[in-house]
Image (cartoon, rainbow, N blue to C red; front, side, top):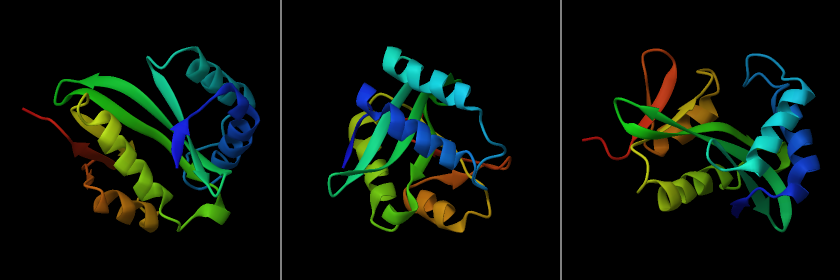
Length: 148
């Protein structure tokens, strides 16, 4: 299950994001002050950032952060900024659930879904391609929704 992040998720988010930002999936760790500022922005407004919490069997299983931008090629664009599922919850379909959730709740308002991926993260690349994303020549992936 996916749900909107709430103030009660602060400790979970900070711990999970800190864990994520100490993996090979990111360029470098982020300081806790940056993660706290991100959480505070998510709580302040959903204009720029939205936070989602993955739940599995009633437990928090991970998080995702969405950001909103505008691109001349596609119009309003939803960046899937972070996707982090705790190791013990991987392989349970939560990643696919995220993309179904985005399709259902965002595709009618956005011209493109966009994300970045480490090319050697083969499981993630496979999941993203299965959900309609394609590689860009500069190492990013994109999925056009309404381009016209």
